[in-house]
Image 1 (cartoon, rainbow, N blue to C red):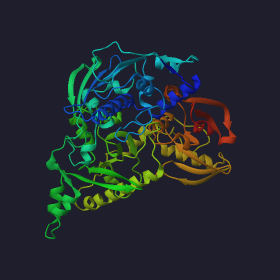
Image 2 (image 1 turned 90 degrees about the horizontal axis):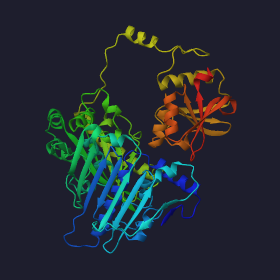
Image 3 (image 1 turned 45 degrees about the vertical axis):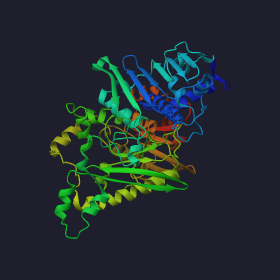
Image 4 (image 1 turned 135 degrees about the vertical axis):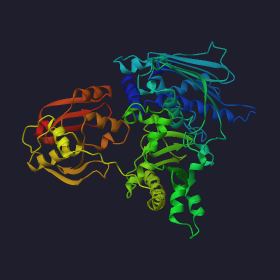
Length: 566
């Protein structure tokens, strides 16, 4: 029988569970972990080199029950291996260079997101199963009793070699609200099913390590009932784009190296084209590979998403409100050993001709990347190497685009000044010791009020080092001989969203500057396990902060509410 905790205290085990939850915390993380394990199991069975073996994975997602079932015909596990697989930081894949998983956190993480878990496995010699009822409830409760997951010989003799994982009563989130096309896109871009190895072999649409994948998706609310539909075992990159619209930078340069070619010929050739570049770069003793493409215009992300039913063209603004992982978007993302990780890199290092940056999508394959627990962060030195390559490729493209491709310019909306001022006058009035007359609706206004109040002596002892939007954080300063970081946000929930997605690191921020905190902010903070403590006064020892914000695993952030300052 597996007992949680096996050695540490119950409180410490629950802390590890929630730490894993906050480290992952994307709505697709559970399915990503299950599919990672399934693909690894098939790779390990392939190492046995049995002729005629075909790897197969079946996926069943029942949105109504919030249930996920993944079955593979991989190597399977012995009872002892199954026992290790569900423990934290225990894994027999640690030293296997062919598998993606490393630190043994994934299956444990998935179990404790469910209210009912059942894992059945057969390694070709014997069968075993483990059942966990109420795992999520136990983790979220105040119970001081250990949690038991009995391991027993499986009575289900129908299961051939392989593993089946059944998770029911999972957390309700956006993943269970996807349409069928969004679900397939998510699986092929954020899980091990989206195998990227074909990209590096020069064939985006076929993969030599092919695994047969079947998907069943049931969602009565959306009238969805797809049964045993085949899914490509490959990353969805440019699948929807005709080959004649894709050209590499090298192809373009070779085609037009003759000095007799005119600019008109180059412009005509590049019109409507997706421009690509691929290569590799060395970091210390390992090599990473990259593939990048630039779209003809920035609007194609939305147009392609609409065409594939990843967003609805009938609902204005839907592109912004749909889960960002379920449709096309620009940026830089990471892959390891052929699996997309969901790690996105900041594009702030790309400077100059910024109108072309939203056309760029880059995927980097680094087999040496560690990504399990805490996977959303990468060492700074490694990130610098990725950024250098991204800058090099972007500048190479920019030289082509600047001369022979039209730049996107924002469309200026016709707006009468009187109409705009009438809109502004409808905003709530602002009263107090400030020159601002309306409640701020933009972060720029918040910043203006903050500096106005700084000039009025409300933040004694604060010395500004750097302010602006080109850096990671809004304000770098010194206070009481300590270096501090301040962030300006229109809403507290906006900061929480960025911190969860690791666009901003909670531990880097000392002060959060808001106008006020509303009920939605408080509700979302509670849902994310963030505690808000109302101070009885503006704390002069901490820049007149009115709130503190903390979670079980993070340092306190002081919250300055400008509403109280003025």
